[in-house]
Each structure stands twice: as structure tokens, then as C-alpha cells.
Image (cartoon, rainbow, N blue to C red; front, side, top):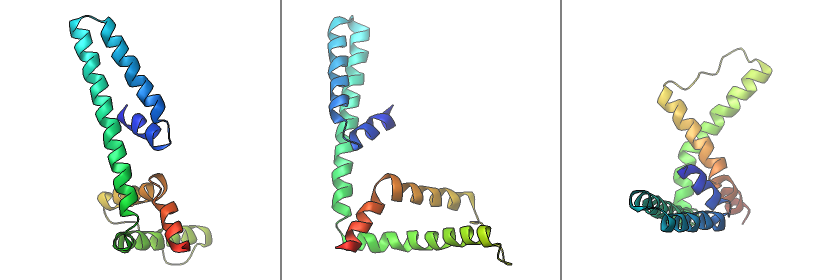
Length: 133
């Protein structure tokens, strides 16, 4: 549920989330004590999730403006991109030497997280904008 709320806010549907919170508050007004308290707590929790998402979006915008951030990110992303390209080229052209897989499940998870960060968070778009300036 939190992931859905965060996603809606990121793509600009914060009004929909706010209306959902207001609907929950209205529902709380009509309920008895125990259910009223539960609904009020859920609405407040959702409000906090919305606020955290807004704060993190501001933080992400600010960090994308710092050149050191991009240098640090490149230390991880560029080797991953090189390895990824080698895997694809090897699978397409069948080079005689096999490209090794990442050695541990944790490293494979981290690689997936980096790819998700680049495309999902919008870092790739920000990086291209920074390069084209």
C-alpha cells in the first residue's frame, strides 16, 4: 500500500492520495470508537507517508545537482554497465571466453537495485540532462 501511495505521488497524483485521506477522515467521523480510532490512525499514517515521499523527492532533486554525487554513482554504475554490455555482446556473438556472472547473490541483488535506481528513480534522466548542459 505504501509503495502504491509513493508511486502515485511521484507521478503527480498527490491530489488523489489527499482525497483518499479526506475520505478516510470522513469515514472516521461516522464510525464508533474502536473503528474510528483505527481509521484516524490509518489516515495519519498515510499523511506521514505522503510527507516522507515529498521530503525524499526534494532530497533526490538536491543531490542530483551535486557533481560529487555523480562521480560517486559512476564508481558503481559504470562497471555494472560495462559488465552488462559484455554479457549481452557475449550472448549475441558467442565469444570464445564466457563472461562470468557476479560472484554472490548479494552482488546480483545490488546490481538489480542499481538498474532499478537508474530507471525507476529517474537518475538516468537527470544524468543525461547534466551531461547535455
